[in-house]
Image (tube, rainbow, N blue to C red; front, side, top):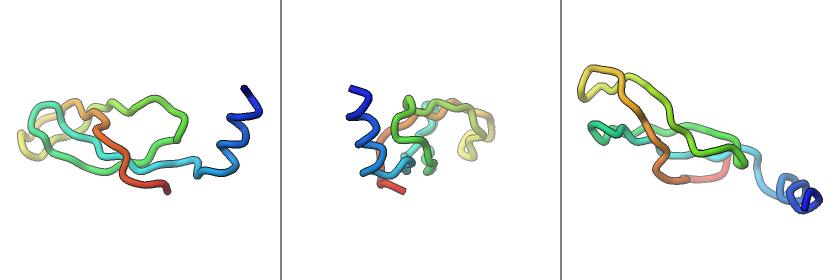
Length: 64
C-alpha cells in the first residue's frame, strides 16, 4: 500500500487548485492545497456580507 502512495506522488503533482465557496453568500475564490490533504474549510472575510464567513471546498479545478 505504501509503495502505491509513493508511486502516485511521483506521477501526479503535489498540489491542486480548488474552488472555495462561502456557506453564507456563495462568494467563491481559488486556493491551493496538497493533493493528499483533507478538503479545505476555512474562515475568511466575505466581501458580499462584509463579515467573516466559513468557506468550504466545492471542487477541484486543476493540478498545479
